[in-house]
Length: 285
Image (cartoon, rainbow, N blue to C red; front, side, top):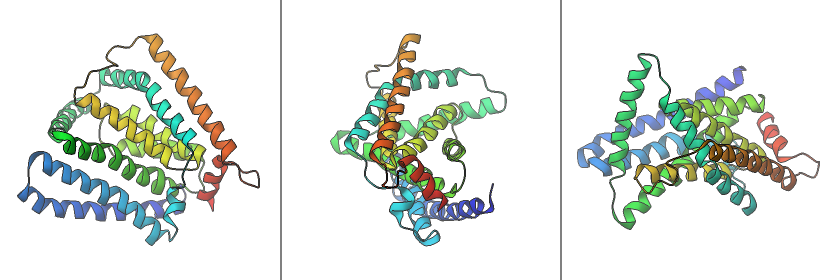
């Protein structure tokens, strides 16, 4: 990779690491004053704000010396695109669920298999504690934390700042690498492949629409569904047949193609440069 990538990436890591230090320091009084669900929620908010969102913003302003709106592609998108993204995430549920179950059933070589199982059990225990909320206020805060806050923080870090590090590179390879790093950072073996595919797809949503918000919306919906499943709500997607999964995949492809065409048509510049090329050109400028 080019030297410029490593410099940009290094400084992004510096800002993220500084945020991580602040989270660790903040955990000292937090763990002394709180425990259980409240403590985990505060820590998660700290990680989202201090390790994702704030480092991405400071990296853009202090290091890149560029407007945050340009680095993060925060321009608004259309309601039509938003509707298509919502529909995309709904129809993708059978395919994503089938992929996740397939990955969970795959045997892993030792010691990776033991680590994956122990890590999954530990994460499940943490999640169960975090989901121990009650009342309308508790649910509102939980959704804001695990869906809205996490989606914005991770998208601004990965599909905003990290994607900007790949300026001048082939956009398809950039999408693959950003999706890969997005999956790696979660340290979850069984969900590695589904999260990699989703992370890569979210990059293409930025390419095709010229905006980061479709990816944020898709990310939030995906997290919301995961939250519903984790809370043991009535499972509509408990049993899938091959036909259902096939239809889900076909609909996903069609909607993604339509989002791509919609982005090309609505974001055409006066010079005839499409949104797809504009985002790529922004990274090369």
